[in-house]
Length: 311
Image (cartoon, rainbow, N blue to C red; front, side, top):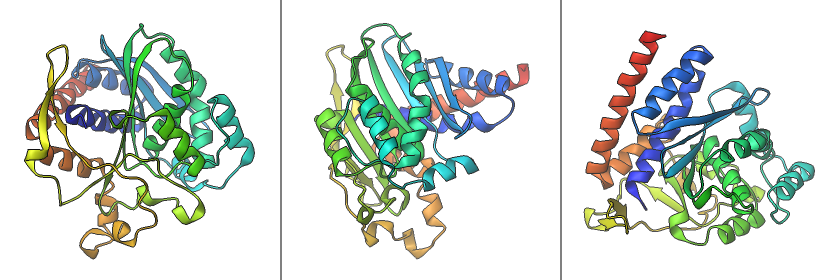
């Protein structure tokens, strides 16, 4: 796993939550300033008013990111709870994504489809040969998975490579979905589903109800891998980045061990779901990459403060 990319995706996932603070003009100004501090510029913001589903697209010269927001409003929670199978909605996604018929979480499928046309319009403005990474935290991770499968089935001229990094993403669909997703992304580098130990959200909806994660699950916990499992890897362009040798797995099922709150304290269900918990584990694996991310976050905060003061 590319640790620098994982940390960047976690940071960008955190930025999506600023979309509920202040008035629209100041929110966009803050977002642009925060992205600029990371060498990115805003391509588009995607929003569906009825479900309050939100995402943004950002890029630099060679890479683009599509980042979906997790649950932070009452309407978002209603989307989370709308997990019933709806053949019409599942069929609509399967048809739109040119994918096999499957059973999907109705709320997530509807939420993604509400942004689909906006997303495709934004991607059509990208220059050719971009590396595209999709990401999101919680519900945002679920939507990123649907977007990834959709885009993998379509010819997107601007996209050279497609990767997905999710944090605390709940289950999205059934075994047919998991199989289709794995076929679309057979290489480990293309999909990482990070789940913190004691975070209950990735284990919902229950597997007993027919939901299944695709292979690519990585459980982050106190048993974090030794530093020897982190190495520097250099690409053909000479750029080196820390990579972690992490064991990926398929869905762990309805595991009471995985869902048990840390130290038996129920408040840890919330703390373990927070993005800060995920960043803590990434930090433990790559202190240098974390330090760089912290510096970028500080720059982003300073830029956001300056933008807010100027507004």
